[in-house]
Image 1: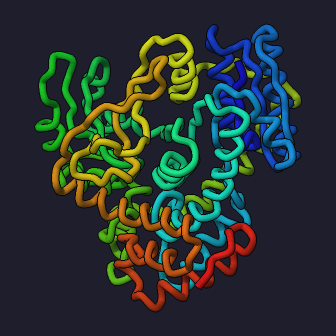
Image 2 (image 1 turned 90 degrees about the vertical axis):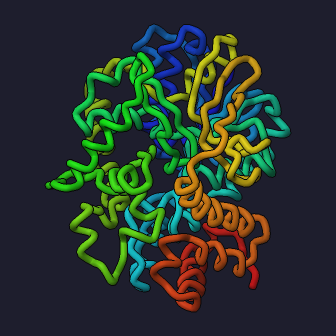
Amino acid sequence: MKITFMGAGSTVFAINIIGDCLCSDILRDSEFALYDIDGKRLGESFNILSRMVETIGGHGRITSFLGVENRRAALKNADFVVNAIQVGGYEPATVTDFEIPKKYGLRQTIADTLGIGGIMRALRTIPVVEAFGNDMNDVCPDAWFLNYVNPMAIVSGYMQRFVFPKSVGLCHSVQTCASTLLKEVGMSDFIDGHIEKIAGINHMAWLLELKDREGNDLYPEIKKRVKQKLADPGDFADQVRFMYCDRLGYYCTESSEHNAEYNPWFIKRCFPELIEKYHIPLDEYPARCVNQINAWEKEYEEIKEGAMKPHTRSLEYGSYIMEAIVTGKPYQIGGNVLNTGHLIENFPEEACVEVTCLVNKNGVVPTRAGRIPTQCAALNMANIGCQLMTIDAARSRKKQDVYLAAMLDPHTGAELDIDTIVKMCDELIEAHGNLLPEFVD
């Protein structure tokens, strides 16, 4: 079996996914093909993963492929392809996504999923991922493409609609949603055996049902405790999601620092006090990137000097999906797939939705979620409109479609007028230079 990891310079994530595979009796003897365009980072991953293979008894084989000229060789005859690239990196791309909008008074927290930062990240990522898919159609057409790259719904939706249908988008937030909420409201005793239903879009899927192991509804008690927490939050940082739960009736999958920028309500120049009130961490992602870069440099030196730490299999879906497809033993995930056949009835079919999927020898098989509550669907649809318009812009390569995507973004549209949005988009396109394809007027 061959498992190819695109963007293997994301060393920590590569260690998690490939380490998980090495913990599996089904997967551990595979070839693990590492691909990246950064030789230094690729070398670090190759060295560490080779040592990991030695540590667990020599199972598996690590190979590496550097640069676009070796991409098809990395993909050839792959059974599974894991995608974890970041086009443009922290510098210059992420810095540009934050600093130019700031000049126009537009502040962001994460900027990797929606907002003007999410739009730009999508437009520079899609051409690269499309090239992967075109190669896969030639050299490994039967592979499954497991996408971990943000903006998840835009990149996965583009891939599934236009390039390589045998793909699924995977996020970390579904697995931990219910347990996080139960811990936050002091109901940890209900985590084991709980029953949940989650559906929506990536980073804004809704915990529609939450029951204990006997099937009793936990939401009434949760909502009482949510109101109490909001009345006296102190330094509690998850207030945006708690406000969703209180006002919309449902908790959602991704963190408050993410969701603060997916709507027009929390980051507002005319209400600066909201930032402190809701503990919204502006510029959180750049700060996180700097900390991660520094932490990794220190960790890599420690690994080089000392023994490899034993790897414990994580909650990431990747290795479990591969096992289920290979063995046919069913496994359940929250996956990002096209809304074909209206899995969520009140969303368009071309939307990329996050719903429960069953995985077996047939691959990833999504299940129907039905209608979701109107208020939840409306907030999702405000995001979906921007997502679909960004996909249109990636296809047309017209500046006008980029402008429309930014105009439809809830946070951008709430803060800036149309002319300012156009000017900001033009400056971002120019600043990103050859990281973006050429856009025409």
